Amino acid sequence: MNRTPHIAVIGAGIAGSACASTLQGAGFQVSLFDKSRGPGGRMSTRRGDGWQCDHGAQYFTARAPAFRAEVARWEVAGVAAKWQAQVRSFGGDSAAGSVDADSATERFVGAPRMSSVAAWLASSLALSTKVTISGLQREAVGWSLLVQDGHALGEAYDIVVLAVPAPQAAPLLRKVAPQQAALAEQVRMAGCWSLMLDYDAPLVLDFEAAFVNQGPLRWVARDSSKPGRAGRESWLLHASAAWSEQHIERDGDEVAALLLAAFAELGGPAPQRWSAHRWRYASTPQVRSEGCLWEPAQGLGVCGDWLNGGTVETAWLSGQALAQRIIAAQA
Ligand code: FAD
Image: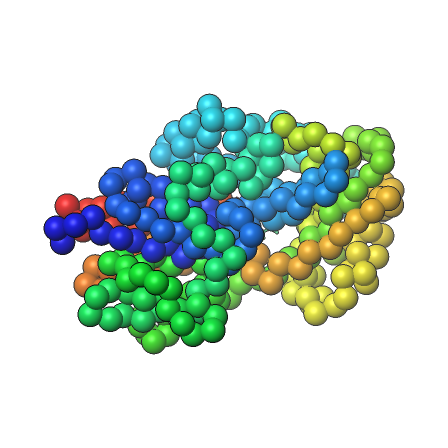
């Protein structure tokens, strides 16, 4: 190729945003697409008047040296910070309300909200939001992206990167890369019910977050204790994957009543306002270990948490790994 290759990245979660920004930094022309209103994917934040709450990823670790360096860059940019929360454990083998055994873990969050990281990464990229890609077509001039009514977006791309959860990658891959589609089809993702609580006044509880190993809950957190948060007292409840799967088709009001009752058992009073969110594809109980997929002959790449460990950190590493493979293939 004697012109700058044009790359379409589908999915502006942390994997797609990281991949796109590294590719652009290496001199490629990159266009990023997402079906949502903004970037971030599962690193997302619900916002209301004077209130906000992260309802997807709660915090991230930074263990790999490359990711630690990236998080340091985010901290300098003011879009991530360490969250030093008082974390407890309830239920299971833990004594009631015991300090979490894992409390030495360094936890980072996006600041002032979880979605800030991807928003910052995407700020220098050509991002089109509210665009759902419904099909891929390989033609002599390159890749065409099909949108919902079946028509192709205006341009042809030399390379396509899919950075979407496995159940959403599978149908896009089926016609153009059946082997990769079969691999994505094997990956089962679990849902998660999320309940965001909005209070007029701060709660008096002796923890800011807790792992819960009993009943429907798995995690509770005082969202307003995270760094950079302004506004009213905000708490987040996550149901466990098993409970969420069992109740995934239930009405949000019924789910909220059950989760609020479980929170009351931990001492949490009823909020003034709440909102529920159902994640159909939250976590990947059995992640794959490929890291990413890259087909140089076709110019087709796949990245995302389901190929590399199921966390923010490993999703970022997946996006990076794919970008490096694409860069190496064009050298
Ligand atoms: P995503 O963030 O899912 O991004 C994929 C993007 O693709 C989305 O923005 C989506 O809108 C877009 N998309 C999908 N299909 C299409 C299409 N056809 N066309 C256009 N766009 C499309 N991780 C942690 O490290 N710590 C935690 O505490 C944690 N807690 C979590 C709690 C919950 C409830 C959830 C849901 C996740 C949690 N995770 C946590 C996991 C973490 O959020 C993910 O591992 C990570 O954000 C995945 O990033 P990704 O870029 O691979 O995918």
